[in-house]
Amino acid sequence: MSGTPLCRAELKTAVTGGETDVALAGRGTAPRHAPIEYAAFAALACSIVIASLVAAPGRSGLFGGALGLLMLAVAVADARAFIIPDKLTIAAFLLALTNATNEGLASMPENIAVAALRGLVLAVAFFALREIYLRLRHRHGIGLGDVKLAAVAGAWLDWTLIPVAIEIAALTALIVYIASQLVLRRPLCAAAKLPFGLFFAPAIWFCWLLNAISFEF
Image 1 (tube, rainbow, N blue to C red):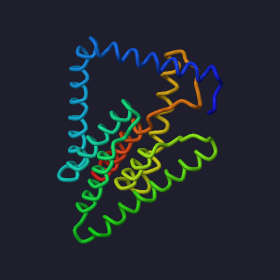
Image 2: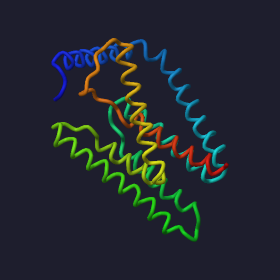
Image 3: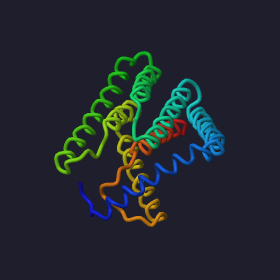
């Protein structure tokens, strides 16, 4: 593990404190905040669907809205437990293949093959990066859930938007981490664990939205 002993100790203290806060919230605080959280989640979900339909009216917008909801669920799951459920990534990948059939009946087999190939290539690239990082640092830097989410990104986005989504996710994660550490007055640590899916999943939908808007204009 990298990082100074002080840095690791403070991270451990922070985790312990977070578990205590959750336990206390479960006794009395959570019920008061739960309706607000559910309302915010519902409002965000509605906004995603509306934005998708405005950017791409018709079936494409419906598929995009469904992608947005799945990516929202992935972000929430990864933020809460550092886990990206397989059922969500599988559903998003199959939805991408279904969306590919919507791009034209004449070229349907080709569209499906291209989408699947992009997903496979990006997943292999993420897995290779995961293995290289493991051999160099002797710890995992990318989870298998992120590898599967990369397959979703490849299936949904074209070659030009794939690096954009990755850059948006990486920069957003870095900015959020640095800002949170500064606000909490904690030291930065190279060994800090971040839920990359929390940032990568929304970036996938956002890049799809940008692509849909560009087609409209």
